[in-house]
Length: 87
Image 1 (cartoon, rainbow, N blue to C red):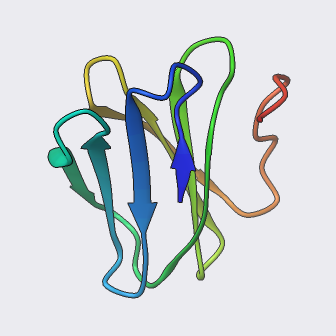
Image 2 (cartoon, rainbow, N blue to C red; image 1 turned 45 degrees about the vertical axis):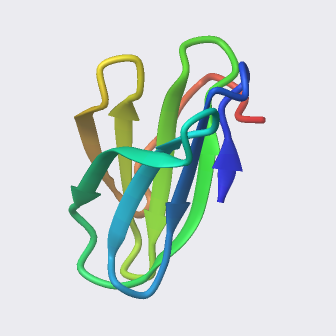
């Protein structure tokens, strides 16, 4: 799980392969994504753009544009992921 930089969103993922984005003030899901073939094993937010990146147990990384809560990209293992630092 990971908090957005502004702490208004919390992203969670797990064995069900779903990524859920929660509003921290309302404690309600604001978005739900199904894209991983297996367990979601890591989540991080980009400090600059508020994108979320998730890694799955099959070596796939997904990015989501969180201000719009929409999927942005899918990257395979061994791809160049990003030049930005994730926090």
